[in-house]
Each structure stands twice: as structure tokens, then as C-alpha cells.
Length: 330
Ligand code: DGY
Image (tube, rainbow, N blue to C red):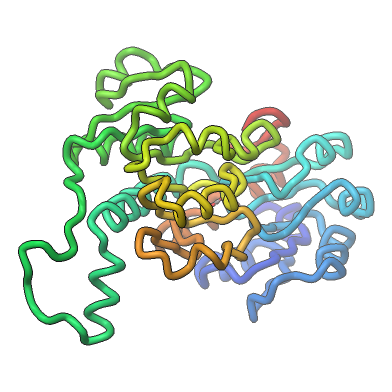
């Protein structure tokens, strides 16, 4: 720990795992949010005005107007999380404020949750759970709770970055056929390892898949990537999975189509309007809804904190933080 480190004022907007908070408090002059409330705009303003470093997370809107009011001390936004669509990266850069995130450490957990959703929807786990919880199960039947076999299904992965590839590995182990669409085609040896088929046309891929899983970051370019027109290309038997960001899918269009049986099912961990999932998605037997818990493991959340600390320490020592983001990178 350097003297510079010990003097850094760090404001953390949400409660983080205990070992992370303890380490932050050892290293920096840190302000914590022990009761884990959502920061008000005024609290965010105080944080950016009084700190050298802020550690926000995905519900904190770090936009241009807020950054324009930042104090001269603010030099680093060390985001606790991989997605940075809540931060105006261009504006931060114009003001000379660095932005880092925590990539890599939540890849495997998010991929696990993606497979969990694929299996839950395809094998009707929530319907089975509801019957058991209500005590209304009257015994085994040859024709009850019939889902679809996972093996042999065509999985179309939209966005083949770290998480997309981790999903592909798991899907392959389950005997699924792996297909993907991404701006850049993978190197042939990685395609071969994943057994993945690249589709240049997203539209074309969508119309051939049994399951679609979203793994692109949210940006103006990906907002409503699956809008009403593209959702209509899906087979009526198709299932849509989203563990990335809700804004990628037109949630109203998806809801309408699920209710009209024009899409067979959905497994969603994220929603277009933050924590406000469309109420018309609730109680649909063919839909599994989760409260954005894809990366929610004890191990992952501690590792995210470790990345945050590493980024702050590296910045404090005058070097380029390992997870430094530049506009246009995501
Ligand atoms: C992130 O870090 O952006 C994830 O969505 C949190 O689960």
C-alpha cells in the first residue's frame, strides 16, 4: 500500500461482500453503504463531488449531467460489474475520468445461469415446482409435464464473447447444436473447439433456431436488437433466454407473442426497465423470471470486488488499470 493509496477517497454506492468492504477500508478512506439502499441522485452527486474514486454498480446512472457536476478530485469510476451501459464513457473520457469494470470473473456463473434457464423453460421446472409447493401433485403420469429434450436442440447464441463461448461449451456438453451470430467470426480453431457454426445474418439464424440466448452488451447499437420484426422470425416453438441486458429485447413485443403462443417460452434474468419486469410476463407457465441473479455467487461477487480493488490500486500507483475501458470498446 502506498501513501497515495491510503489517502484516496473512495465512495462505494452499494453494500459489497464483507471481505471486499474490509479490504477497501484497510486500503482507502472509504465511504460504504452499509444498509444497501439505492443511492438517491443527491447521494450520487455528493459521491462524485467529494471522492477521488467512485465504485458504482449497474443501477447508478452515471450520465453526462452528473459527470459535469463532478468535483475536480474525481479521477476514476471503478465499476463493480462488467456491464457499463449505465455510465457515459465518452463524457467521462472528455472530463479525463477513467472508467474500469470487472470482466472475466462473472463469465462462468452467468453461463451456468443461462443453462439453468434453458433447462428450466424447456423441461418445465417452474410448473413442477409450483405443483409441489401447492401440494397438489397426485402422482406420476406418462403424459404429465412433458417438456422437450435438450440434446439435439439448435441453440443460437447472439454475441460470442466470453460469456457466449462459456454458454457454448456447456451447451455442447448437453448435446445441443451450437450456432452463433456475432460481428466478428471466431478463429477456426475456437469454432472447432466449441463445435459452433457462424451465421453472418442474424435474421437467418433466428428463423432456424430452437433456443436463442442473448450475450451482447447493451449499447445504442444493440437496443431492441430483438425487436418485434426479428421476434416474428422465430419459430413458434422457439424459446428466448436473456441473461445479458433487458434492453436488447423489445419486452412488450416478447410479452405479446408469449401470451399469443407465437413464441413457446422465455427465461429472463434481466428486464427492459431495470427491476420492473412487465407484469403481463408474470404467471405465464412458459416463462421463468429471475431477479438479475446470473452472477450472484459468493465467489463471483468477491472476485468482482478484488478486480475493483486491483483497478483502484493500479490507478493509484500511476499505472494503467488492467480493466480500463475506452469508449467504443463494449
Ligand atoms: C454485470 O456485472 O454487468 C452483471 O450484469 C451483473 O450480474
